[in-house]
Image (cartoon, rainbow, N blue to C red; front, side, top):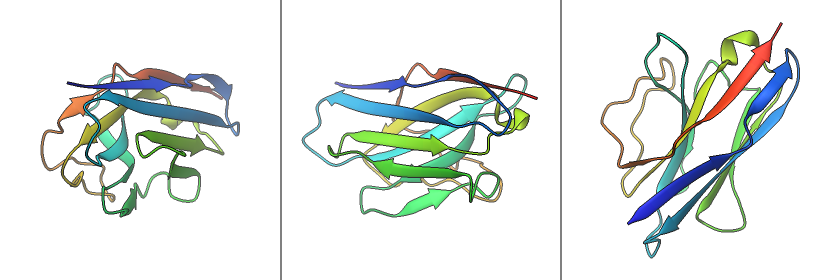
Length: 128
């Protein structure tokens, strides 16, 4: 059984920065694709940034140049450095893990399939 745990959310003023971290535990004998997704109230969940198990990085157009996704020292840790935050970045941010490529559309954030494992989410609030 694989568990996904996020940390690092909080409140920040527009223009500020936050770093989110995600760790997967349990059955981690294989390399997982890992990614960050977010859901604002009344909106669908959308892709933000991900790293597939082959190292392919995908970043949403809406955050490109502001957000950076990276693996930690362990293959089971994923970070999201968020800079120049905007009020429209306010959402609950979820980490996902899957043994296959994440398969989502960076121009729209739309996910093409249901991903395997999800964390509980961490709230990011950006005030103007």
